[in-house]
Image (cartoon, rainbow, N blue to C red):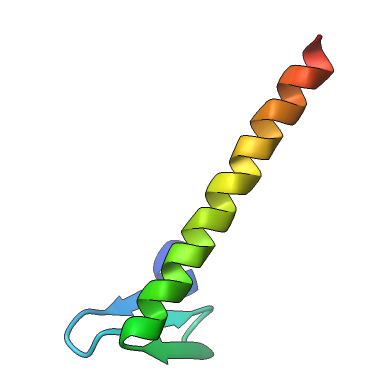
Length: 57
């Protein structure tokens, strides 16, 4: 599954690996990066929604 390849979480040692384990972060740093990524995705979706609403009017 491509999602597991993109972001792979090792709960036993608390590591998060992105993009086929080429970029790995451990411990609390991974949680912070994951939160930032989720926040960026949320903001981009929010702006796309507002932009599409403005375009329809």
